[in-house]
Length: 484
RNA sequence: GACCCCAUCGUCUAGCCAGGUCUAGGACACCAGCCUUUCACGCUGGCGACACGGGUUCAAAUCCCGUUGGGGUCACCA
Image 1 (tube, rainbow, N blue to C red):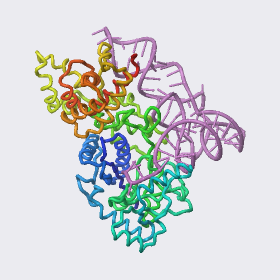
Image 2: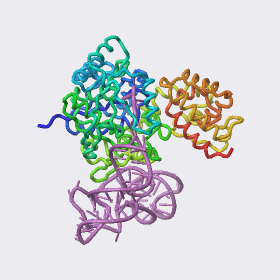
Image 3: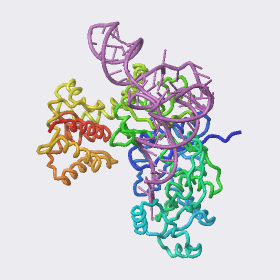
Image 4: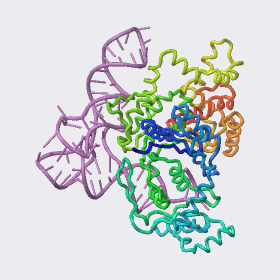
């Protein structure tokens, strides 16, 4: 009998929950469900600098919202735990030692400075990049002595210097690499934490993962991973590298050019089943080419071998259309229910109400006054556009300011609330020597489409990061087409 | 630059593996029309693609090679 199928999604909690995570999760989920196997959620938080619990919580939320339930994970437990890599340090250390013992890995004492120099030399010589293997020749005893003495070091994988590494990818067939081309990957960092490569392989094995379905960007590290499996003497899982979601210009999808946070889709009124349905369409077609289907139907019909390889361009317009189809399929009662869960939840209304309270004279005023709190994208009437440019600035300059405000000030905010937003915007204004007047009105218009609104920071706090970000980006597009 | 991956309408794709049924099918978007007090939905129609060059073959979108183009990776990030 075939081994039970076990798949996993292994996100890194370093930012907003990403649409690419949902995409990969969907295919993993489908394969596991369709075969009566398990779908595992593992948190890859070995980058202590960038990982944070808030991001992890958001990933849980987003995946739950989509309905991609996992059988094992940090929050639900399971037989292969812990499911957070930061809690598995001893396991990696142990395995790294095994590799040193068997000669498949070695300690490296080279400093970052030397590595930087090396890279610079290689770049100047137009040679290939990569570690030169200097510490490979240090004797085992000496290496052990230096480690015991507390000398800073990393542990590197000793790649073979010749031969080919051939790997089978479910979608592409055999992919081969010359071993010389592959760098001696760092497996354990000087802080003692493993890198992705070690932790990922060790965990996939220990957690019994049978099918590694992940994004195409990992293909180039495949030989390292295969080498690790071999070094440990472990059986290889089935590898399946999914095409990357793309921007309209075909580059890897990015927040500069697309809303990539799942929070955006939820906030902007997309149905989880529509988002999933759309993602499934990126690379997969139903046997009868039907475009609208449920998660259950997808699970039933999914065939990993049928995924098409061209990198699909993420097309918000088609998602909107599909979402409309799903909306129309809802009964009035269900639609009401959905509205009550999202746009018109008591919780949300209670946030908006205080901001409108003293500004309305009749109950009916509320609807028109607070309109921009309930829509996705906002209109920018002609009359308001010129005011979206701060005094003494040109539209292109303003667009650039918005962009930098996003990237430097707003994007990094994980805990989005009045205080953090205000601080970010005021800091930004200071740093770029912009007066509040020059910056605040344009931002206000960008995020609301209006000149008259409740307090800017209160408003932005209630709108949420995703809507603000999206509207700022839309405003930038308009600014770029405006005459000075 | 090196290595790897990919290549059908503007976009998502079917067809390709098992070559003829392909004057290449569907969907989004766009255009026109129908329905309708309006809008939307819905329906009908239109526009629109096998990247290029060589092979193999009676026959190539389908197989092979090359070119071009696009993408990814080259971190003590994942």
